[in-house]
Amino acid sequence: MSDSTPPVFLVDAQADPVVIRIEGRASFINSGALRDFIVEMRRQGRVRFVVDFKHCASMDSTFLGVLAGTALELRKLSPPGALILARAGERNLELIHNLGLHRLALVETSAPRAAASCGQALPAAPRTELDSARLVLEAHENLVAADGANLDKFQDVLAFLRNRVAGGR
Image 1 (tube, helix red, strand yellow):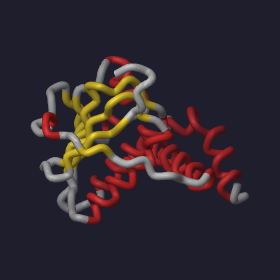
Image 2: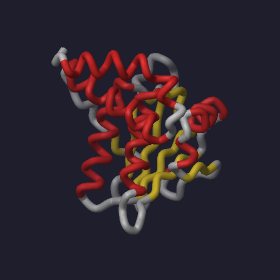
Image 3: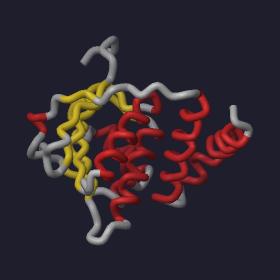
């Protein structure tokens, strides 16, 4: 995938587990669509998800925070749901470990069973600046909930975003 190709999340909502394949960069720009998709799948009773990183060029902390929030919610269920992170490259795997997501999700090197059937692209959901700030704040709070050591990494970002959201701007 070239840098000029827009990133996309391809999904198979019929598979069990639900498969999400990342094509390109996973960032705060497209994390809202992913979160909305997962919320809808959860509303439909889906509790098992696999994220295929094979074609993921890079990811940021907001995207990882959305995954952390998903994993935390799935762990609260009885019986617990599952989040599987598959085929993450060396750099992405390093980020997963540095932020503690490997303690919340199953990390696999093999391909997800339904990877070949992914084809439906998640639509980009337009968000206001305030909604985007709320999403980024929630994602970073999820990272702190996932691993308390992340507070030191993101305390300035959290303070800034809390002020921005509280001020409604």
